[in-house]
Each structure stands twice: as C-alpha cells, then as structure tokens.
Image 1 (cartoon, rainbow, N blue to C red):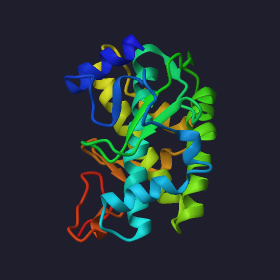
Image 2: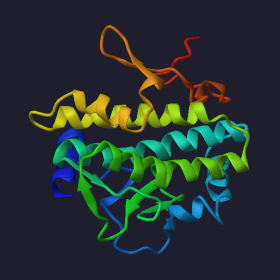
Image 3: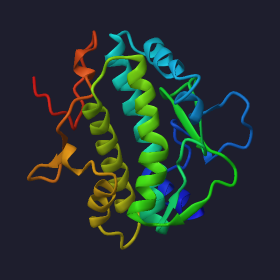
Length: 223
C-alpha cells in the first residue's frame, strides 16, 4: 500500500484525491456504504445520487456516475499493479462508498486489512471485474435502461488513464502495463490511441447530452 500511495503522490502531487478515502483505507465506516449493498438491497442508491448530481435523463445520469465510479475504482488497481506488482482486492466486499463526497460525485475506500495478491491478469479480472464491476452493472441495469457496452467503455478508459498516470510516475515502469491491464479484463477494444498517443474512447459517456453539453478530452463524439 505504501508503494501505491507513493506512486499516487508522484503522479498527482498528493495522495489525497477527491474520489478516494484519505490514505485509501477507511478507518471509520460511519457514513460509508458497502459496495456489495449497491449491487444488492440498496441498488437504487447509486442512481438516486446520480440524478441529484446531474440534471439529466436517468440513463445519462447513470452513465456519468458510473464513469466517476469506475475511474476511482480503477485507480488503486492500476497503481498497485504498476507500482508494487500487487493487485489490491478491490472487490465489492472490500470497497466502501460515500455518495455525499463534497468534491466528487463519489468517493471510494478500502476496508482495513484489505489483502493484495501478486500481479496476475486472472487475479485482476476476478477482483475488479467478476467480484465488483459485473454484479454492480447488473444491478444498475435493473434500475435503468442503459447498454452494457458504454459502461464497459468507461471502465476501459478509466483503467487506461489510471495506468498511464501510474506508468509516468513509477521509475522504469513499462507502458506495456497499460495494454496488459486492459487485456486482463477484456476491454482493450473499447479504446484506441491516435497517432499522437492520445486516448480516444470508442463509446460515449453521454456528457454531450447534458443541458450544458460537455465534450470530454477522450470523447468519440466530435460535434
């Protein structure tokens, strides 16, 4: 965990980021929601928070909330992989969530004692995709009509952006780690790189449909 946080500081100039618990670990769970609840009995809370945050149609608000969620979820996974060759267990059972973060749509943190395993594609797929993303997206799609592909596109872009930040911050890190991470969760085909090395999504988060349209730097939509 120390190597991970040191790499985050190197990349962002601080380890205190708006979408993550300070120090990444939640010492006091008061006010935090288990991610397992968001995929189960409290599945409507994520969409309700999204609609409070954005004046948008339900599926647009859901897509934007998921974009934020997936980025903050992917960041510790990517930095752990690149900085220490460890995969922190970002499973739904180990992740806690706040929906009232003042500076971000969502804030994530890990339970104390969250384990890590040596970096392995199968482990990453299990802890990130199978034991967190897939059940959460299943729950989200039960609440609102939205296709799975753009949601996975946000996951792909989030993982790529987080991994590229990590690679730039960690001495001797290889850019190959980005491709390895994307292939591990089978989302490599949802983004592309242009001739200048800029990332571009092949799906859209729908931010351009907001009352005040926003075009993301990696957007596939070009007005």
